[in-house]
Image 1 (tube, helix red, strand yellow):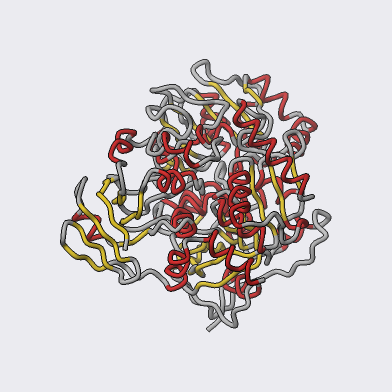
Image 2: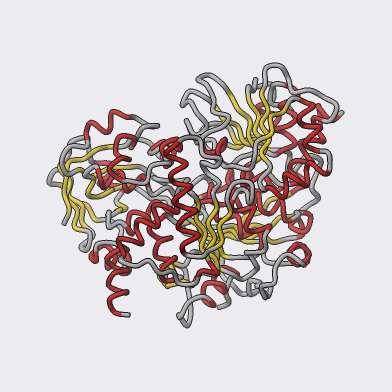
Length: 163
Length: 420
């Protein structure tokens, strides 16, 4: 179960360039990426990243560049989960690999307002927004296991330990 | 039920006894690629995994292309790290002046053959579908896993079949084929799918043009865009690679998630308007739009074919006084070939600035940033808000004929107006 305050990122087809502009790609330390998250979209969204947060997003979120800076900066900024209508492929993979659940639940995304209290039971496929419960699209078993392991790094550590 | 090309390649690279869309399998890689932006993050992730050993040094390629030549100290540090890591691990490393833009480079150098699996820490790794490979853009943590284990997890994609028919008209290129597809399905329409290009029209597309088509597959959300290998592919690979390969074709009873058609007979040069590659219109619809900068180059359209098309438009003419023109040959080899053929001199004489091969102007990293209120016409693949400098700037995308004609006219123009 993950929970946090909703930070609503409006719009559809939000690309990773506006989420983290190219000029800042020469940074490889996640903590140093934080000040540039949302820089090309709405830098004031960063002010809402206080404590644990859940990002609420529209369709085809994270399209374009494979830059992992986006989910790395999100995680470093306290984002615990991304709830949206749909996700672009590489962004989705990056989230799963970093154990940042990306959950498809259009109705919950629709219902959430900035500051809404959101909790997500990833395994059960349930999203609760200010007490209202929504059913999310099921997360495939493999991705669930990856999330439960803590992402691709612990998953790889486990594999290395076995070999 | 038969398999598509994508399914066949994935099946051959996994331990699964069958594959179907949505199934998750581990897929073995034939080439693992990364650059100065994605490589150093992958190395950090590898360290966290607790190992410094790579699965096969002969299958790993590192290319300094995004911030190369280094635009500042921070970029120089990343490139240094990329180089030192590559030397320490004895993997292929292409520094500035020795390689070029990663995708054009590794195709050119024979790393990619039909039926192979190419993964890269760059979303435009999809480019290699042009040679009948399964190619996938991944993030840096995925790349770290691939460097260590030589495999990645993959949710088997469905296949969207695109049939290309008709005769290619003047000033129409591969770029227009893919813009037509993106326009039909939208920026997210290919999610969880790959594109597969078939039909009689495919034969009129050279490898350079196919590279452009496959390159923009990701702009439709598709994982890659595959051209099943044919005689054009074989001719391109002849003498370029010593890797063994066999052409992979889809079965006649393969199942497709969707079928699309692109008819050259009804295709004119297309333009993607700001700020999304799906905003596609015929060039006539945006003709007359003033343009302050033209960029010919990048991993989509920086080939000899593109440079020749640009020269066809600017030969004996001058870039309009309102407009700056930047030309970026995609690789050092292309750069030299263009010099030998006299193309560079014609472009410089017309008033173009020639850049060493780099990704800079395309992703807004460096070289050719736009001021607020400026408009650019680029042969690149993305026109997202702010990607090429100011968020108050606009970028239009199209083929090299339209771009170069636009440079001469100072406004978006149908190339036939400049050619006559």
